[in-house]
Image (cartoon, rainbow, N blue to C red; front, side):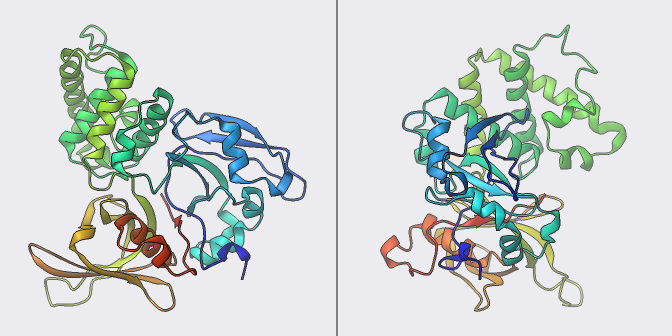
Length: 369
């Protein structure tokens, strides 16, 4: 089976800044487009210095990441349904050419609809403590841009109040101090509101009231942020990031699957499987509804009694206990082994030399939206 599985499955997880590249399968690529994960779709063009044998490390060297921040970001390869973080020795061009096989191995989607792209994003193994030590303005902006996208795509579920607070901070970043003459009724509308509030929240409100209610609340919060006197962009970005870091799911690598949520309350019949994202980060394992983006469950590592994948590596099993009792969760996903490996690594339960040599020390992330 295609050698990208060298020891089961070898690359890693989730989404930060993006690198996409136009590569012609039938010719030797010369350049690669590296897209950052921001609302503008920014990108840089890199030289493929060794042709198809160009490594991730060679691409990263050209990116000239801020000093002391090489552990913060990683290159991912991704298509619509699958995101994988790559190690420095991996060869992206070769993986692009093998993408059909990778998609078949790790998803149930049609490879013909999956166009691979490279991303520069937050490293899935980065801890919150290490992230908080970062002081470089460029690195902070990159982390902020990625975080903003995850908020707007509702991959970091939050309350309406938190969403308004974040929108108020972002208004201060984009427009500066609140100006009642400029930032009045109608300034935020159905179109630009989506740059400040997750779409699922906008769609959840009654159509006649959702725009005016959100706009009014955001304007009030913008005024409140202005009154605090914080005008330095980097400090505002850090304020936004710190709020998001309080969410249990922040920094997660996401894996798509179908969860069996247990029997219904009426009649005890089994509920149909629910499409979910399994988020795995330094805090624990979390499950959100893939459609509504509601957080369904969150299990800190210290509450988990076990997690493992089935013998056919097509389902992930989690057992944990909280104040309400014991729970078990089964998620059908071809990335089960990757979830287990990542959880092992992030939880600290298994040291590197205790892990099977058949397991990757970095994983992949399925990320369908």
